[in-house]
Image (tube, rainbow, N blue to C red; front, top):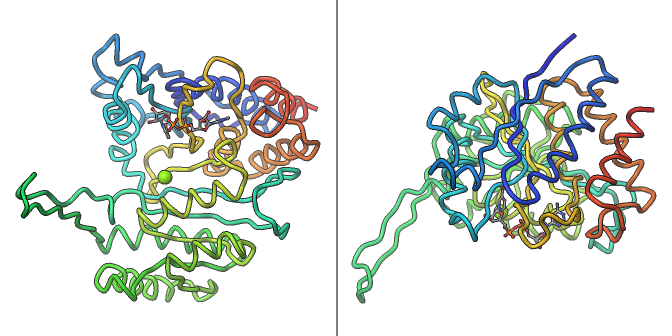
Length: 351
Ligand code: NAI
Ligand code: MG
């Protein structure tokens, strides 16, 4: 019987609430599929910062390398610890320390969830965002601060290895899905980085003759995600472009209560990190109002990544068996609490 060691990082605010609600559901689906999930709760958070002066132990990333996957709630309590410290010292430290270069986010409407688009055509998009370089590499500087000659430079860094690995991951996903891949570019305006991106797309595409590649300019695909999302499947984008497109994706799937994310090192050998896209929501924390579905969906992504596809599919089916009835948390227009919604899904899985 397979056993997977999972690092559980509830973090702060509703991060704790959604992870505590979701974890027993995952345990149940594991039991039904004859594997075990061995969870280790790690208290790294803003509370931890107040008692230890740091967000996680100095060897935190090393500790995480001993697990098969990381399941995270949300991090940040801006009234207690400034966001640039909490996010940098925990989330970004993990993403960088484990070189989680791929950020994958599924965007589709769960059964029964209305979503904001007028068209009812079903869509199922997997956005894959480069997570370590590009426009967010941090290269640049400011000169003549405060003076008339002041200048700010923000340099996008695109490496051959960095672009190739995210594209290759996208092609692999496309091969397993519909065989269609959208490569997001802006080579009509960004004559260096995005022309390079296009060349790399062509180069990697040569290894995947079975995948049908379409090149979209980022502005055009942003509009397309709203007007014709059903025409898209796997979408691969740079860090900045992917950041914006995944927010559109979250919006068209009904909002932050649903958006899930996988942070993956495609070369393997280190755990991936699976999390809801939302933050710690201090405005609703402690009230049982948080929607646990994004976290459960992230759990399904984790099971899929661990190779337990049947369990992942069962979990998604159980989630949709509930959403199709219109039941849900207040953000979904329902009356269930975080725990009640999770327990309804768990009951279906345990049948
Ligand atoms: P947020 O995502 O926590 O909340 C934005 C709005 O969405 C709030 O009104 C909140 O009540 C609502 N919301 C979020 N998740 C929800 C859920 N599951 N169910 C129902 N409603 C939900 O973003 P915000 O307020 O900008 O940030 C709060 C803290 O979270 C900050 O410290 C921020 O840095 C941190 N943060 C952490 C992230 C992470 O850990 N990955 C991601 C985004 C923000
Ligand atoms: Mg964003």
